[in-house]
Length: 117
Image (tube, rainbow, N blue to C red; front, top):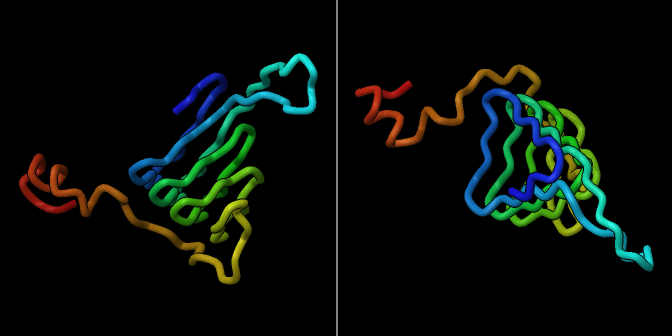
């Protein structure tokens, strides 16, 4: 994470290995190359797959999925699936009645509790 601005992460969010959350950058068109920073918001039940990059000012909507390796420069609507570089919303949406815990499959959680969630 490069946290030059707020990063808000909701409940039951899954962020896989190698994801980058970048809240600041530079304007390449500015002769002084000034830095800017904007917050990132990841809403409840979102899933950010392995190696995705979330750029400054992006909101990932409730239940949205960001595909592996995607580079997200624009908001992803609720329950949408976005993939690619640049990330684009693909056909299909997720169910709107999500009720899972992304940690229930994690072996360490199971070992700590002595049982699956």
